[in-house]
Picture 1 (tube, rainbow over the protein chains, first blue to last red):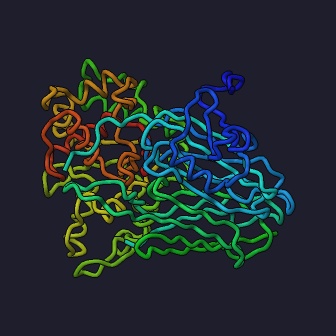
Picture 2 (picture 1 turned 135 degrees about the vertical axis):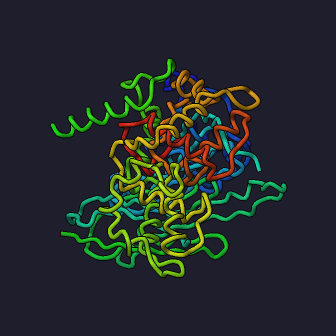
Picture 3 (picture 1 turned 180 degrees about the vertical axis):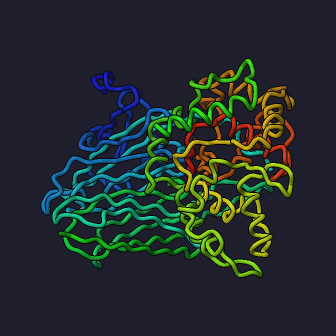
Amino acid sequence: MVAHHHTKRATRRGFLLGAAQLAGGVGLLSIFPCSESRALPDMVQAAIKKVVGAAPLRKGRVTLGLPPMVENGNAVSVEVSVESPMTASDYVKAIHVFNEKNPQPNVLSVRLGPHAGKARVSTRIRLATTQQVIAIAEMSDGTFWSDAVDTFVALAACQEDPG
Amino acid sequence: MTARALINVPKEAKRGEVIAIKTLISHEMETGFRYDNTGKLVPRDIINLLVCTYNGVEIFRAELHPAISANPFIEFHTVATDSGKLEFKWSGDNGFSATESVTITVI
Amino acid sequence: MSKLLRLAALTAVLCSMLPASANDIPFADRKSGYALMGREIQTMQDDDSANPGMLSVFDGEALWSKKAGVAEKSCADCHGDARVSMRGVAARYPAYHAARARPIDLEQRINICRVEQQIATPLQYESKELLALTAYVGQQSRGMPLQPTDERLRPFIEAGRDSFERRQGQINLSCAQCHNERWGQRLAGSVIPQGHATGYPLYRLEWQALGSLQRRLRNCLTGMRAELYPLGAPEYVDLQLYLMWRARGLAVETPAVRP
């Protein structure tokens, strides 16, 4: 169903569409990484549904910048940018970041408006393990767009003396 | 020591220019998912909100979760419209509150 | 021109100080751990408004002019503007302390000032205050080459080298086996650096905080399943001193960021 995305960069997986297009009768928002049929955990899907509601979640317009290989999961640089003219009639209202395998799915939610000029936000996040990170943009026209990236988190050597 | 915040905003900008705003604040961002040496869960203690106002008008609001790294760094943008003050307010668990402000001259 | 001459003279002095070991990293091949990090962490270090170590530097700046102790004196009361008076100081620490007849590190120097000049209690190792003052003093030497030139340091550099090259701990490993012979390879998921202490105190992402070189050495010893010395032990200072000698000529990066 999603094999046409397979040729994309291995570290970047698209993910698609909400209940309307995919889950059909199931009624729950389902999000599938494109190159594998790996569903996000229920908890993550529920957190995303809370933001997106019944609206379809489309791939595109959002670029999630995340290194493919992370030297330490305690501070991973993340940048989300969204294609938008940022005018009074067409702008990004919010950007949300979620993760797949931390104890909690939510990472960051920011509210902006046309006065931002540029829909781009950067931060540093914790990633407990190798996993997918998902960014979602909410537009002024009520549409939701997204990007997802898989990142490999290395374990540190020579840690603190215990106790 | 009290929380220290560092704000980086250009001192001067042209009217209409999009400027980058970088914010950094000292905070451990204790996740609430860690155990101490005696096996007790360390309670969550995080900053969960950053609000930025520009001459009194809110221009940016960020909700932070435990997955935000210690000493939170957040960078965002705004259009330089008027000279004046950018105010930043962080708040969080256990009554945490910190404010910082910078001035900008718009030419 | 004069800079080159000075560098040449310095190199001559230093090379005469100690003979090279067979497995030393060739002088020209030495590089800071910075060069082995990913671009994201390099950017974090380079941008003062993103480098979390700068939070401590600014704390240190505030402490510098805060009066303390029975003497009610601040660092600034004696030393004035740190940007002038402390420039280059960290680049020559650990330094020889005549009264103790041995080298002391920057933290010990700060605490000697605290006890003897400010008549205050010494700051705890790894306390926020001591790290902040050390980071602030260290930052004043940023970009300057490390240069241990005091001849009196020689026996202590040699003692440090001995402990660097000595196999120890339950897995019978020496510092040199990782940092001279296997740098660039991986240990767990981490790239093994050459082990040049150019940026301390530094912000280690693993710690989620600023920490001292002694804290880092303790992490190494723990990894080696070796016995830890108490904080402030002369063994650490000798090792720090050897590491500084080994990194001579490399630039101070305080406050550095490392994974």
